[in-house]
Length: 258
Image (cartoon, rainbow, N blue to C red; front, side, top):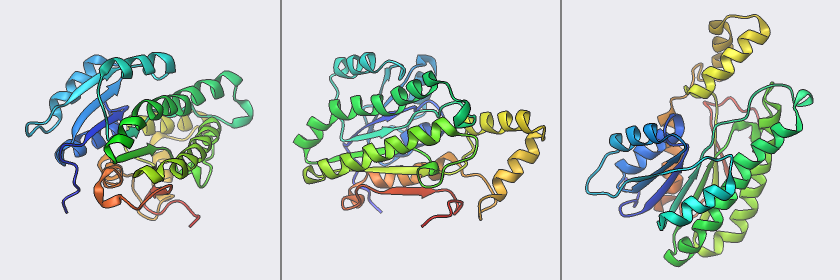
């Protein structure tokens, strides 16, 4: 299937590892010009060197998602235009929501919603002009079913999902779609962190915690980042032109709701 991504420009957040990196590589494989964005320049350069290149123009931007104003300045200074935006940021620290401190909510809201909003406001004018826009937010299945022990994440992910749906309603008339990909447990550094933290709190071994998480899915395994990226890249494509404002769980069937 030709996804029609040749000569499209894509900005991929959190693209030095995990789902972000896998999405960047697959977009490049489909012919897109990919710009990576993250805070670690050494890692950005390493991923940039891995991107498939058939005469494409790949680049990177160094930015810290704890500072929305700095992010805005970096995007504007790049003078780059994008047809595709993949919003993807590492999740907040785990723990019960009752024990969360106020600054944990503020930090997560800034990194996940404010920065998403800054990027959309910066990129949408060109998308309107081009008559083509794709915003894909990598969130979590907690949008449909809150996850135990991830109180702050559950709260903020829900806010991002509602922001996204509202945006989809507003921008659809301009041939711009806004959709959410909801990964289940995926083999990333973030998952390893969650497993280790849970093992420490419960007194169980890392292996026991991991096995229980795998068994929560009918697939009885963790996803690979590339499997999540498959959904991201399809939603970024011409083939997904009439898919707008939806949440797509990619979790092997773990989520109980329809």
